[in-house]
Image (cartoon, rainbow, N blue to C red; front, side, top):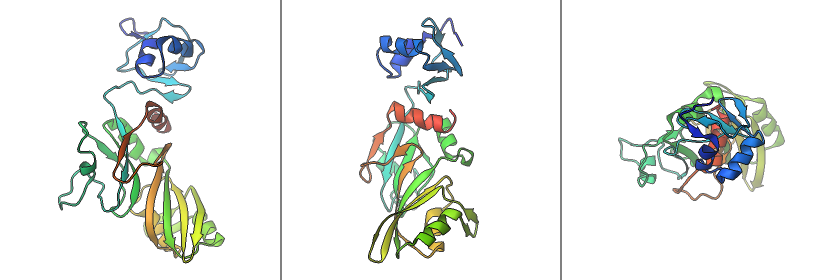
Amino acid sequence: MHDPDGTRLQKVLAAAGLGSRRACENLIASGRVTVDGSVVTELGVRVDPRTAVIHLDGMRVQLDESAVTIALNKPRGVVSTMHDENGRPSLADLVADRPERLFHVGRLDAETEGLLLLTNDGELANRLAHPAHGVPKTYLAEVEGRVTPGTLARLQAGVELEDGPVHPDKVRLVQQVAGASLVEVVLHEGRNRVVRRLLEEVGHPVTKLVRTQVGPIRLGDLKPGRTRVLSRTEVGSLMTSVGL
């Protein structure tokens, strides 16, 4: 892993925002840093930050300073594309102030609100979108009718749709009011309108749908139409979740 023409590991870690150079030396000495899969405890190691794969406590360290990943709260009525030939509001309208060429990770249908990730890191985007990595996505659905424990059990057991069965990772009742329910659904797949079709199949059409989480990234209190740049820790957790 040592590259005699590279940069000292502690300097690379400090440049990645993990603390002062002295603090990063302590991280290395305590055996918390790996380079290309091997634990490094010696302070003299040099690495090439363009090619080295570095983890701290098992979490990937983002070394590419040009890489950016953004959380967006997509409003209702916006289509999940960077350009719409029919002139409908698109994601590009919401990130027009960003200089990077951004890719959106997955889609939300026009009527669904909530968390979308955009990034200029092509490898991360591909990994997050690939079904093999099974990144869980959490939705909060307002539905017609009172959802019973029996219906929750049916959903959890899996429901057959026209394009195959759907097996949610988790389903829970959040709240009930007169004639309506609030249900949280966690899925690791992204078939078209799958949450809406799943809930309609069990007799509870969706009246409002919001995606609140993708993998370890939460929507939080981000307002509709607004964006925020993910922290290095958040990006590291995303990369680790897809095996980077």
